[in-house]
Amino acid sequence: MNEAAVLKRPLAEEAPGTCHALREVVLLGERVTYRALPGRGAPLLAIHGLGSDGRDLLDLGERVGHPTVLIDLPGFGASARPERPYTVRRAAEISLALLNHLGWARPIWLGASYGAHVALRAALDSPARVERLVLLSAGGLDPNPPAALREHFREERLAGRTRQQLAATLAILAKRNTPATEAYAARRLALHGARVAPGKSDLRAVARSAQGALRDDAPRRLEEIFQPTELVHGTGDPLVAMSVAEAASKRLPRGRLRPLSGLGHLPWLESPAEVAAHLRRALEPSA
Image (cartoon, rainbow, N blue to C red; front, side, top):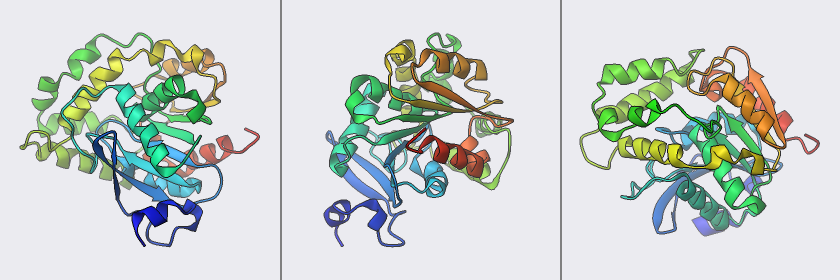
């Protein structure tokens, strides 16, 4: 069956074994890849974090059981590495273009880390396309991020990191080590080791996306987001402090904070069953 025929069918009707297949489409002139999971209920658009791709949310998507599309944002995964600024607004526009391609009018947006910032941007720019937000370890919440982050995410600085330095950084992200967190770290390290051909690794995309996020005004406009917004956040998150999530939940008109005791910045990998249970409750029609 060809791609067009598959996309015209509900994801709940997908043939077994097709859901992990990587699909490709040109959106706004850029080659973008994604995966689709079948399921029942309201559709989900899942957006990954920096240095990651849709694979990191596959297990969570399967556990939740809703029709889910997992995008590889440009610069990450198998998507193209365009030579352009990596703004949060552009990432949101690409995500919206994928919805148009799929024929999805108003899905639930599931964002992890940087992907949460992209979802917040979409809610501001195209509120009619966002049913609700479910944000994991959300970026885009702090209206006054530390100035040192600009230096931390400078492209030249990231390029100068040794493999050992990157491994040490990755080691602090999770508070609960699992095979999934170890596989995540291994993928990140493999990309770092392959940084020999310009544009072929995610290095530039990480640096430029982070700098774009620091310039974006969504964190200062949370009061304008009126969709129900669930913040699922590890109490031990070393990147986005729990206090930041608490403050953001109060600024969001329909915000609700779901603390995950003892988990770090990768709760969907540290405790996927626990996170999936939170998500299923959040996605209930009466939630």
